[in-house]
Length: 328
Image (tube, rainbow, N blue to C red):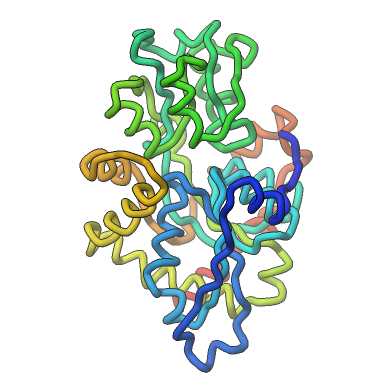
């Protein structure tokens, strides 16, 4: 993976997006808390974080923030390595690369997304298995966790090595158009793009990743931020604890907020299609005891594939103490 960071100026120029500084109604006692530069991806993985920012939970905890949206989490990770963003979500594989390249630390697990990651093939090709991708053009966001899991784990399970197919590099939000134009034969993608492709009759989902990798998505932070602003990190995680219950107690409200994000971006999908996509995200903020074991296994794969230079020092990489303080 090329470890090229994306500057804020370049990203804003490319997307036309702007960082929104929010935080109205902060409590007076919050004056000492730092403003969080929050990175998140605009696919379904980033939507729990998007909802957090729209829920008012951060403001109630006195946390101000700026938001930085990108197509996928590995781009947020690169921004964090470049110290342009303080906090961001992505799956374990991208986190491990970020820790290796920039010392990033995990402060919580936010969700599991293995069911959202799928291989979708063009419907007209009638492909039935990952093994059928040999010799085909496969859209893949290189450097992303989904891309790494497909190339390093799932493909080989079906006898498909990277040299067996033509990898077409592109962002996940560009893949449906490429499928419709028949410039690629399949895509390694996440929700809601998989659900849209299937609902529109463009593709068939032939497999999801959950049987191979549950794919925990972590909230990571730069070491600089946690060292300088531990009180802000704790208040931030308290906001996550506040909002976590809403995903279970008021799923309709959550779905409406997130649905409006995608329709506001011009995506045409029914509420039914969207709800099926969102249901594949298992939102469960916390810091589970088996996280290190999972990441150890993923790190061994990345080290073997020479995508990281060394095994992490887990005492530096994982910071469950912040979640524990937020829970006390």
